[in-house]
Image (cartoon, rainbow over all chains, first blue to last red; front, top):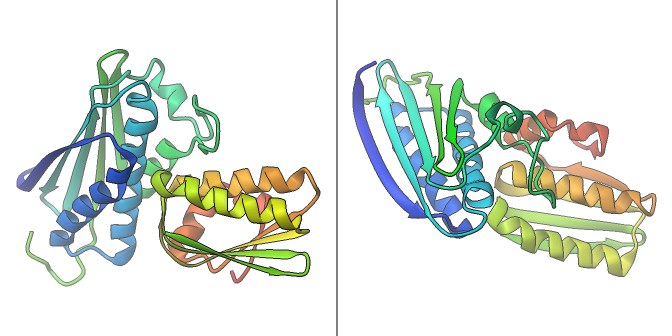
Length: 147
Length: 103
């Protein structure tokens, strides 16, 4: 798949950056002329992935979250969200709905939401090294926008 | 993000507005819980009409309020949910815990 545009950024794993991160990616995605629902899906999935970095990956300290987003032909957005945090011991288990290791008021739905709201997600993780979540969404071109 | 609380008899209504995420959920939770602790309602209504964004932190918020209310036998209703918020509520199976009005 040919990459037609790309942006990357790094931001501190602070909860106040959650809204900034999802706003950046969704603003970038507007080049594909998405519907409001598609934009909302992207915002939600990014919010979940970034929150996971803050709540899980860097739970014992601060670190960077690295976000790369690419526009691919034909009208697909690929979003990579990477951390250098604690990593996930068992990715399959972590992706089960309602599974959470932090308790409190976390619903344990982060990965379920990403899977449901995006077309495809993959998770690569190494304990002690970090996690990369890659998500894809095909955008229904409404008016033939310029990507 | 803001929460406006209205108390009518035994009903507490929390009008939520703005964005609900992990960053904002704590303040919302504290606002609602203090109103519930003070008024001991038989029904808590969460009004999402003016919520412009919600991720699964909002689901945690709803589930947590449900658990607290269940201790005293009080009910939880949800109203004003947009299509997107409804999609999230459905994914989490919230309709089994709370009555979702206006759908």
